[in-house]
Length: 454
Ligand code: 9WY
Ligand code: RBF
Image (cartoon, rainbow, N blue to C red):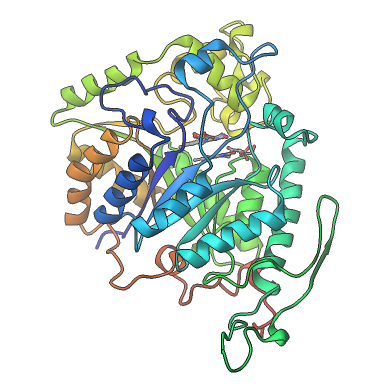
């Protein structure tokens, strides 16, 4: 019996993403990212197809090359403009009934008290279908300028993120107990014994008093995490419930998944308590030749200026300023370290070529539906993955192709987890817990007053 995979759709509330520019492609509709119809259509399509969740990435700031935002960024819609992912999720709640809805949020730039309320509101209104992708923001240099806050170094951002988690666990798990709201017109609205003051006095954050929202169905939204640097993995092993890894070979992905499961074990969790999902892109053709032709259309849409500007956005590094034979191992960044580390054995010239057509994102598997389905199963089995985060190269056409041609093969082979019969919280559906609450082995559940720990 094949392993039953979980599926998410990777989307981004801007015209392009992942450091590429495919918005001019005739089948691209995401250049209309600021229309509700685009998001409605996308959410319904993946819910009907049986995806477990829709995931919205997010970033702040803009590309900066030699002190300013290059004009190519506006010409190609590279970094800006975008919409707020959490508000899009709010609009999608009434459009969907089973789909998990996941938004990225930054621990560097959000204020924990208001952020906790925003997530709790979404979780309440959706009946417990919300997830939060915890990021420390890898596009930070210009982001902090907009916020007028100091820049924080890469590893320190994860220390700060850990403290952010302490504050939001207090608000989500400790402040309001389950069942605090009685809504009894002849009695009381809430039970005062179930409403608690919280206190946090830390290095980066202070918060005292009562939480602004009562406990939501899941309490803490399902915690997603994608940091691939050593500090990011450590954080993921402690707090993450679903972890995204980039794409790669079976060996590379197995390396990532076992490192993350090791980190989970160090935190008293089971290796299977973290669900590992790999970013996955596919260019599907009825023949290999057709698939290669379709991929060439994507690659042709790129130009070197896009590459330089978008690489600078994710890393702060201006590749055009280095000799092409410079080894990438000589470069370092305080921004998204993943984007330097993954090219450790390459030169600057290689990256300028390789970045072409997939940017930071997943390098597409190009082939027939059978070849793509085979590859997914091979990767999942060989690298101990729990599922995939499908990242469309041409949104939404690549997603439609995947659903129409590849998904039926995966379903036939029994490789896709069935849709839940009843609406379920995202945590029960994706993580496999028996209730919507955090597993008892998760650090966040130690903040729950009502939980009797043995
Ligand atoms: C995203 C996928 O440096 P790290 O690799 O630990 O620098 C902090 C952090 O922003 C980076 O982590 C960055 O790589 C995390 N990251 C993603 C990473 C991966 C592997 C598949 C998706 C990611 N999505 N950081 C985002 C995102 O949407 N926003 C973000 O700020
Ligand atoms: N975003 C980042 O800020 N830094 C990253 O290193 C990063 N790596 C990614 C890797 C993959 C495989 C994928 C699919 C996405 C990644 N992202 C990253 C998310 C990025 O593509 C996202 O669209 C922007 O950050 C938000 O506009």
